[in-house]
Image (cartoon, rainbow, N blue to C red; front, side, top):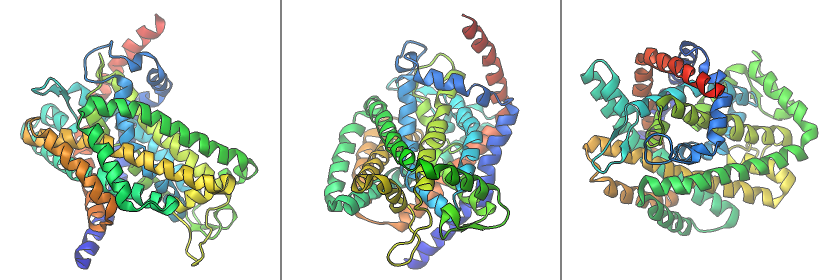
Length: 466
């Protein structure tokens, strides 16, 4: 078992290595240039659309849920423990400069997210129940010129999405919730496991309408709750903020290893900052993975480009807002590089808890723990929908969806009560393998993406003149 674990861990390190990260960010850069930087130029329009009253209605076009609900369900799956634990890990492993590389990867990830979501809406279809079904697998099957190649790519994407949904979208999240609640409040993991399994079952059995209703309340609440708590920490440590920000940029672009200062005992170079910043950024916002596109396909919209813009803001909210709050809270509180009683460098959730506790005392650890629990639980809900639609695609029918919902809910308990390194690494690999067919598809359809976004620009101009 140990050798199998080690072998899977090695494969995991390889698939999430430099080649994968270059592919993900490189595709984002290529698509951003090909679309004439319109995703950047129209980001204010996209944010304004997301926050508009109309985004909460189903007045324009057809679909299962409102544009805002489709975004929050996708955000439920992306705003997760990566925003709290992942940022802290990146800043320890890659130094504080990792935060800048997170921002850079997110800037190009905007176009990847826009492209995959826009295509998913364009090529979605209705199932026998009258519900929308879409995502990269449908885009691959219907849009790629070589139908056989498209069908194979779509099948592979759906298979990897189902595997990833049980691991990255389920077990790892259940484990994060139960272990953080046990560490902070001393609640046995099996109790937490039963509670979150029952809650998940009640919500998930109701399907996309129930999941989106819960997500559209929980996601904005948890994000605002965490951002406000983080801002309090940053404001209370405001005197350290300028030196913290200076250190972040210095470490991001320094060829030589930098040590000392805000980073304490951490030694980091630009290459480390780039590697860990990009990896954690991509892992957190899932741009290029294709998962958010499955949820985007359920949105009520009159134009695929319009909803593409709304869903694209997921990367902005996830990385530019939530990850930045964590990063600045850590950088300004002076906890980066500190060691624990055994002399090991503090990292992961313990580092974020130390940053929040530096100002808020014990309340800080409660807030981070509640944040982890909310973020992780919402990820379970969002990923269930991703996995269910991929499952439906594999079986060519919605008839077995309820079986998937029940199995998925019960597996939450396994994740909450067991630490399964093998499952974690395996699902991590599946997550990376989802991205490969999706990136190939977007690159092959880049001409179509550029044409559609440029055509929609005329519609935007007309709307602005009204």
